[in-house]
Length: 228
Image (cartoon, rainbow, N blue to C red; front, side):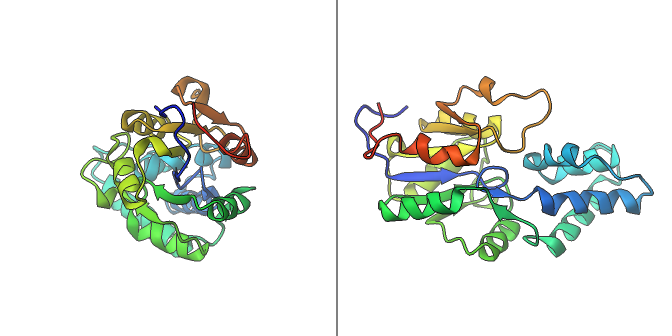
């Protein structure tokens, strides 16, 4: 956890469902995959709540098949191809995030991304959104992705800050677990892609953001933030 008196030097974000609203890219992809299998359209909210779980979860959701099905990997590659074609077309920063990033820069606080989204999709998305984080850690870059803390430890090294000087924000239990295992202060993005029956209140994060607009006040409740 934060050491008494440690000042905030870095903020690391999860990507999908925390920093960027990407569901509107995935919803048409899942619907297209279903259409190709002569299945009716699915309720958009069901797709939205599964985005943070990645391509495997979306294939299972779309086609109701599991990973043992011989068709599974072929359909996962089809979903990824559809996503690559549409990547970033509808994605946007969450409300208040652009101003938050500007504030971080103005205060000399570095920021980065630690995501389970593969680098081949992460980097083009960030480029489309004109985002230039000081560190980008994808599952390709580590031996053990989240909820293992390796991604966050690597991010802190790249941002040249100590673990106790950084905050991690994420919209999934695995994000908060990774942050806690690393020894970081964690903020749960309860506005993100949370599955039915799951609750950010149950993740044991240090703080919870009900709206993306709340992130600034959680990070800077006073003019000079000092963690206790």
